[in-house]
Amino acid sequence: MGKVSLGRGNPIAIQSMTNTDSTKLLETFTQVEQLVRAGCEIIRISVPNEKALKVFLEIKPNVEVPLIADIHFDAGLALKCVEKGCAGVRINPGNIGGKESIVKIIDAAKKNKVCIRIGVNSGSLEKDLLLKYSRPTAEALAESALNWDEFFKKQDFYNFKISIKSSDIATMVNANRLVSSKTDTPLHIGLTEAGTLVSGVVRSAIGVGDLLKEGIGDTIRISLSSDPVNEVIAAKELLKALKLREGLEIISCPTCSRTEVDVINIADKLEREFSWVNIPIKVAVMGCIVNGPGEAKEADIGIAGGKDCAAVFINGEIIKKVSVDDAYTEISDYIKEKIKTKNKV
Ligand code: SF4
Image (cartoon, rainbow, N blue to C red):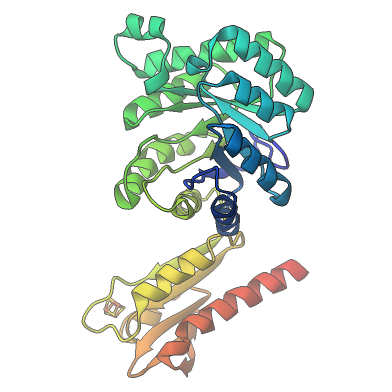
């Protein structure tokens, strides 16, 4: 998909979706840029009408990251997107207008080297499967996904991935397990309607994390009712926690009455500013000098609050003191320097 390859041992790609009005160019483009800056590797934009398609096509040549057009119900619009060269198109075969339309989209995707994401969702499961299983169970979703997997391959088309979404963790996990045991088609994994920043991250970490630990999943989205930049940060944190990615690791204390430096804001800002970093850098942000350096000995750099100052420490040893206001800059300069040195090597 554009410059991103999925499956067969390629790194697990982080994706997200814009939530602006996609008929508005400036807002949507700005958010795409924010997502890229945060480290998003695949970006999906919903294309519900011709106006949104026009905006999509204007954004596309100005972004290096592959853009996926998200289309529901309108096979004609999906065809236009594919013919005009989007990197990928997401369709739910269950709601795009029958097999004839799907074959047309597949043919156009073949011709234009466009990747298709087959979406299988609890909400758009085929009627016969709903009847057979009485509700969208893991088995029902897996059967639908495998039917489409077979159908697409029968058209001699292989440039596609499957996503099975459910808001129920066990259903999503079990459906993906079933599918991955029967096909090596790349899988996009994630919970749908996962929830807010906190609940969605917790629920996704359990569901998506379980699958990733088993080696299942080639691209992930952590869906959140939040700024999509948070989805990217959460996805990267999940991959780092599972040792599937390298990046900035922030050790920060929970703060208490001894806190002398603005730990919460400094740690938050570091997480937001440097979510895209892909070399291992461990940073500690500790509220006081009593426990700070000792508790974060293995950090590359750290700060610990002192009386009207912040002590800067490297490998647990205090090397200098700076003003509390300069604490953030001290760490961010160190990170930038480390990246610069790494890039020179
Ligand atoms: S490092 Fe200091 S400020 Fe932070 S929680 Fe521990 S004792 Fe409190």
